[in-house]
Image (tube, rainbow, N blue to C red):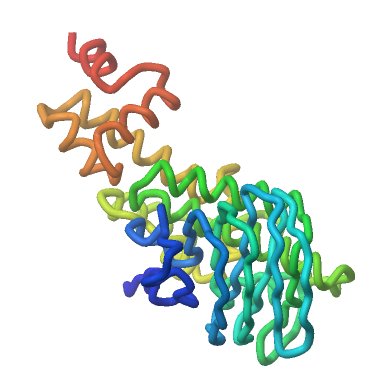
Length: 301
């Protein structure tokens, strides 16, 4: 099954490539497909950005900072407070002039994700939903979601991709609700959860691919549903989000290997899809209440 393309810095506006505002950290090496995140200390600059097919959210982590932003329809000069954001919609060029030094978080979200969530909410946009630009506004929920994505990226590892996909759905829903406050009534939906046969196929797929990153798009394809519909139906059926379910399966496999194999902790970590041994230890302790080493000694004694 073909995996979705990784969201890399080459898919962005490239605002900081070769500039005096180099990216300090990013999600480029994490294999994410729905989101791309970068964090940087921006010094005063001016730039014109070409249109790209995905949406860009810029959060000011410090400040205040004066900016002048312009789209094809308007030009605004304002002072952005800490926590303020700018939204530059997909397929729209813009220009930006930053007058003050400020730390920022850039978060790109695939327009395909936003379009799919809009459809699941009952909106019908044959050419894709159009978001409105924002310059210097506050949105505390979007800010908290972005900071959670930042925290996930900082934890590192390709195994964060599934959680990032789920965060993208929440961000997309918030963006849509902001611009379209009166959604149409969605079609009636099965409230019993994923059918048993579909759930079994998903469970088998997860078990067969625990040694590598698993993408939400892959699970939805196996389940035969759109991503947003799959997430809702899966949680109804299992009581867990796909990310939680996969993480539990990784921990369950680690428990079996710790009890019945002589593999090293590093080998077990990789065979269960954890990024590294420390990631296994942290996750295992949180779920089991003991470190992998202590657990192995207790069950093999």
